[in-house]
Length: 89
Picture 1 (cartoon, one colour):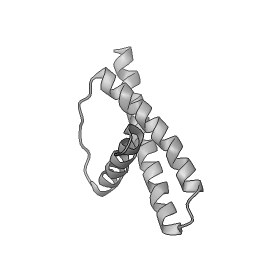
Picture 2: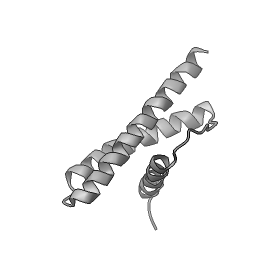
Picture 3: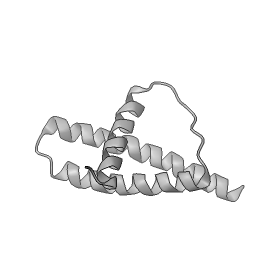
Picture 4: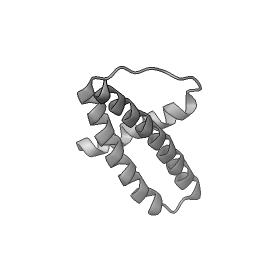
């Protein structure tokens, strides 16, 4: 059985690959609590991903992880902007 952290890693990896393959924008409605949870999970995962990139010997896998990292950073930036906007409303 995987722990919560392992399950989040798998889920976020899948989300990353889906975001990269999806050519159109989409809208996702989140409550303030859900947005803040997603922000924390993304921040933690990006940190873990950096460690994984550094410890990976396979060039191809490293490149895929770097793409995931860039996709997640863009998603996190967008999420943080939305959280800030909702707090100032």
